[in-house]
Length: 475
Image (cartoon, rainbow, N blue to C red; front, side, top):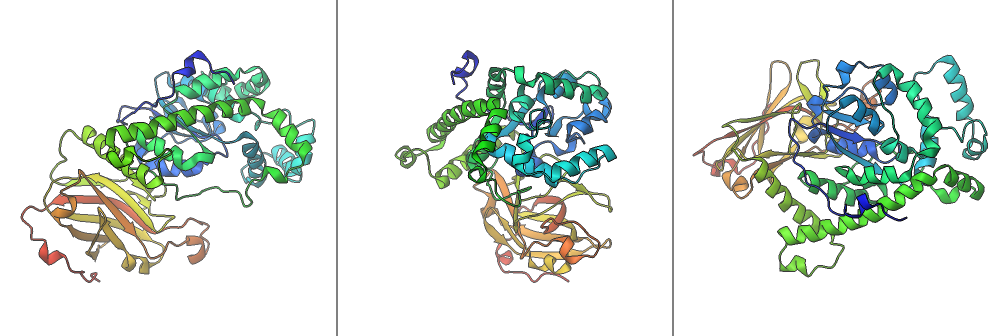
């Protein structure tokens, strides 16, 4: 494909430090690993200013007061719909997937969906659910009109000028009719102008680029959500059906080809830039593409540099973090929740290890305190391993009157003195699913600790030698 003039110079990425004044959009195109990415970025994506809508049909039934003041959006939107409603600049990220695989995966996803439907919709869905992929593609009344075709091109570039939310269903019907006339070049230009785009097939490289752009501690691809029961394998699809699916998605195929070439150039620029800024002679001799451990090492240095730039003033004497706030970097956490006890919190999981990075409040000894609101089983509380900047910490636990647990640990000054941040890591012996432990509980998430707040308090002059032994957890 021939590039447009607007996109020929877009081989570099633009770095951006998120502030409380930003408006952020994660355009989650269905079946592109968006649920996994959304979980990874959630703590850094202004969660306390998040719009409570995810789907276009939810947007249609919301009010402008619910949507316009929000500064953080995550969901299956059309970009132009948000631009029309917000009427202010916003930073957008998205992920694309190889179109044939995305289409096939989307077909089976819709067949599995259990959502509220009208009787008429339910009858149509039951008929659809009984179809094979071959039958669906060949059906003259569905396949050429269904909303799955060219979804990536359309969600990025289709005109959807929303002035009244209740008009969205009619606008979507019109967009579906107009989709064949949508120029792919519009989507290419729009894609190149976004703050970030990644590729599902190159997910870890996409996470590294995203970490570079926003100055986060390097994100790691350790999670998988909403995965299909059977992996999508286009080779198992009949040739005639594949040919039809290809014909339905020619715009997405063209867009994806463009995206792949642009991603290659940007990723090469990323590696060269990391070596120039943070590399040594050893890195200069390393062949491209750089090994994963080298990229991680250089991205950590990049994070340190960006963190120092963002933190022009030292934190207050006691640094208190609650999960309603935005954080510099956090990995291995579930979404934000509100407890019946009052505070907001996040569960660690689904992996056994979760981390949180906070700015260092002082170069002295620090006292760490954090509150655990809930666990699936009480014995999880006793199997906690705690680390600060890689050093294991001894801890004590005190049960509070409301049955929550407060942990305390001492962090020696030498652990934090050489770093502008404190990387805290919690590891549990195992994560548990409530559905396996509690009757009448349908929650199938892998959960560890429900943590509501974390504090770091400087303790100048505190002797550290006595803190090196392992303390017995308090009853």
